[in-house]
Length: 293
Image (cartoon, rainbow, N blue to C red; front, side, top):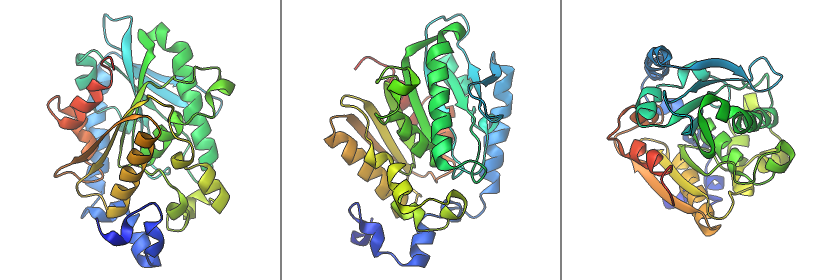
């Protein structure tokens, strides 16, 4: 990473065109469409596994989730995945490609749907994801899940949303424990929205400066002792890597147990497909978060 981008405010050294390039994840691959098709094509066969589909967790028509329990278990730990798509694309049906690999390892999987921008504001998208987690905590046991062993995950914009589930300012109002999320593995996420607010994605987010600050995970870190794996892909842009390193450092300073991984030979889109491989480092790190601390 260049010295120009180092530090929390390094992005301010970038010109408009370079800032746009740094936050254009799609431009890091020759064609994004094959990767997006892979998400759906690799997820669709997972619906042959035991599952419960379209569970409603909130009032909006898009507030649905899918659950993949572990057959024969009444106390399976739960891996909750929040999809990316820069808050404006993808759905839960694109996001369960890891279900067989995880359930065979004894870990249940939940895939969260939320209303996309610009139809929903980012504030509302965050609120929806929090409602989904509260629903899982209240109802997961009825589906064979140990709601005291929830690990949250997310990729790209889903990394941002996963980190907002770790923040410490919403649980009491939702009626869930402060530590409802025991650990998280966040991949190629966005944790400071100040630079995002200054470039292309704000065309559909429409964030003001103060709102970008308020909705940044850097402003509301996880509680002390939270276990985290923060990962990025080798072929992510420097800004995506900087964001991940910055958030990992801040969480570590705040008393969290943090591992950082840069996944070699992976790009922003295929990195999470490693969760289909039981031998991949990203899979092993995810599974380790379910082990006793």
